[in-house]
Length: 129
Image (cartoon, rainbow, N blue to C red):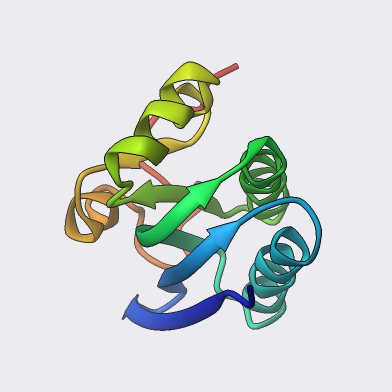
């Protein structure tokens, strides 16, 4: 299944990327990673993945999310997750990815606390070591 993406600019350099579909190893993971790469190329380094329309994610997809976080942090940005359905939220908790990637109930909650565009450090939250 091909993933569908919808971008919403919340503020300059801050994008909510709504993902629709199932994310599994292979082409879906590649599509998600490519979409994040495009955002980085476009200087959108603060990204919120809206997972409300994601039906399933496998371990490869969770790995893709962690890679996206590393890429964004490597450019001075950050990644947050929002609106994870219960099944996805449970997977994020079981794999402890929710301890690495900040996870929020809503996109609005995820958007709060991001530093203004151009400010050193993409987030007011402390970075986990």
